[in-house]
Image 1 (cartoon, rainbow, N blue to C red):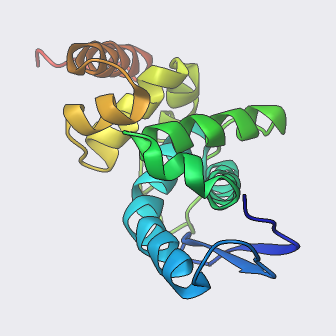
Image 2: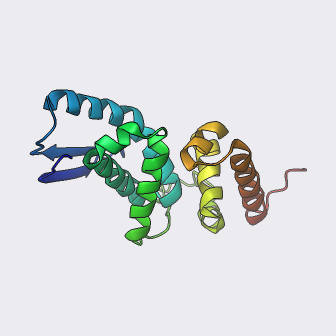
Image 3: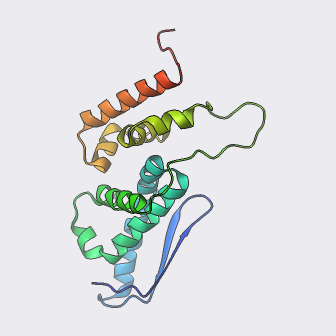
Length: 182
């Protein structure tokens, strides 16, 4: 098991997460271990961050991503053997976000240029959805993920994700008073 003596976590202005960990002892060649973990983070972090931001908003989602990746570093032996590490780390981040009792997602207002960049009623309508509906809708329609990718992340069947998306979109249309028949 790795021991972590000093960990500094940062979130860049663009929203990417990096974890600077010093003083790691234990495992064989530290360079091999670090390189494997850095490759894992490069592949995993963007998807994990998008999913957690969709669930908890930009600030809490980024913090949850940092917490999940720090957990992955500390438990790398276990993470290497998990068949769906992104889904597992999503659950870790979800647990950390809930423990911290972070505020619900909040869309930051854009600078006023006359016309709003998005429907002003969208934020309250998204907040009214269930967490799974919100995550499914934002990932599928906001970030362009496929239903299979969201299903793998959430540990659901593809048909469950499709149901969450359909119900979420229906609830959004109703809340925003959008008539699709017109």
